[in-house]
Image (cartoon, rainbow, N blue to C red):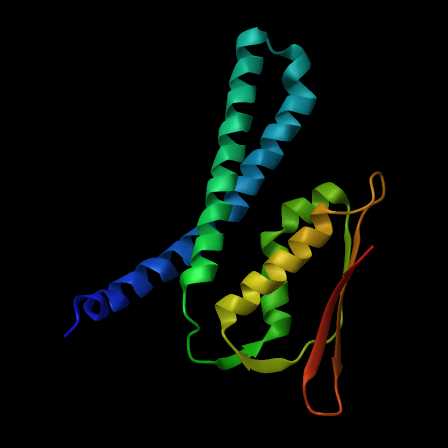
Length: 169
C-alpha cells in the first residue's frame, strides 16, 4: 500500500473538520464584532483612553480571527472532495444561512426575498457554503447609504435543470 493513500482518510477528515469548524465559528465571531461595534458607538464617549484602547484591541483581534476563519474555510472548500450526493432541501439550507447572517442582515437593514426553492440531489455542505458566500457578498457589496435587497429566485428549466439566481440591488 502506498503511504500517501494511507493518509487520505485522515486528511479528508481533517479537511472536513476545518470546513465545519470555520463555518461554525463565523457567526459567533460576527456577533462579537457587531456588539463590539455597538459598544464602541454607544459607550466610547464615556470610556477613558485605556477602555478605548481595549475596545480597539478587541476589534483588531476579532477582525484578524475573522480573516483566519475565512482563510480556513477557503482552504477546506478547495481541498475537500465532494461527498456522495443526497437530497437537500434548498429552502432549509437558505433558512440556515439567513440565521447565520442574521446580525449582518440586521446591521445593513437588508431585505431578503426567497422564492420557493426545490429539493435537489447535492452535497449539503457545499450548498450551504455556496448560498452563504453569495448572500454574504450581496450584503457586503451594495450601494452606499442604501439598504441591500437580496432576491433568491428559482425556476425549473425545460430540460429539468433548476436555475437558481441570487440577485442583489
